[in-house]
Image 1 (cartoon, helix red, strand yellow):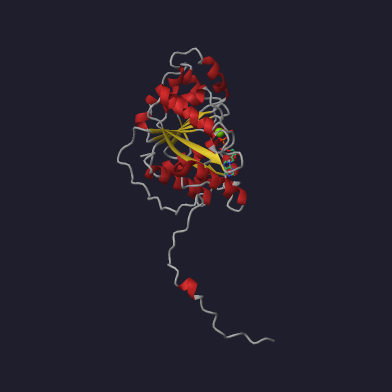
Image 2 (cartoon, rainbow, N blue to C red):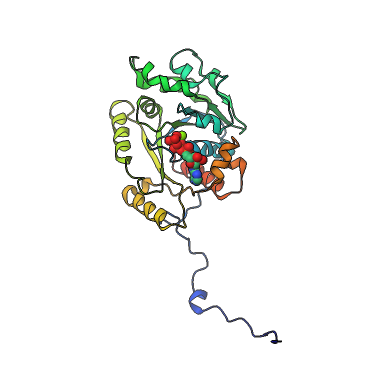
Length: 302
Ligand SMILES: Nc1ncnc2c1ncn2[C@@H]1O[C@H](COP(=O)(O)OP(=O)(O)OP(=O)(O)O)[C@@H](O)[C@H]1O
Ligand SMILES: [Mg+2]
């Protein structure tokens, strides 16, 4: 039997000894990581800053971001209203709300219900309410085409409730039609989720052009709050290359927070719960909390 070695372990090479103890590691966007501070408790609520989540490309994380960013803001004591502005109703379902036996945003849009408060439903997350939608909303674009000021209908609806919330998040459908133009017209800022995959940048030029048109014609104050890389997989060179190109193209508009790819999101959707509640310690839950802090630090929310 080999005798157990009593030799001391070799000392750390000098190179490492002399390295500073806390070199800030760069984040996935290549910039040094920032610790965004925990936001102050708000002494009073409202008026809301309205943020539209928009990208006409499907499946990039608009709804997932609306749910989880909304829940993260609520954890920080913000009063949050999430607007489901997609006839697919994924936001409504993802927050565990039934939309068939309940008034929806469509009823407000066509004037069948007048008071926006009658359409708002609380969710399981304290401080997070939702204005639900269902397939009825798909008729809105046709129904509203001859309406006076048809681009401003949502803005008018939100004015009724804006004073009671700190943040209103609008989850758009994957199109640049009249509903999305309504959402952009109602908003103070736009957040663009961008999936870290090869064709991610296709279509962003068209989206930016649409935002510019809305700024020129309907909503001069609208700001780009940031581009949020989603479904990032740090293990693949592909994901890292796409993110590099996004940063090259958009510079500081790209948020420092990057949302990683994980099956926890589909799992949480099935449970009708934000990931911040479904798996509170999961890195993806932490990422959405960081996103809330980053947006507050950038002045995009109170
Ligand atoms: N970071 C992520 N990692 C893994 N899966 C994700 C992630 N974010 C979202 N998903 C999943 O990808 C799918 C599309 O996401 P989501 O519905 O949020 O996109 P969307 O942009 O709202 O889509 P649509 O354009 O159809 O409204 C969903 O099944 C969701 O659970
Ligand atoms: Mg969606």
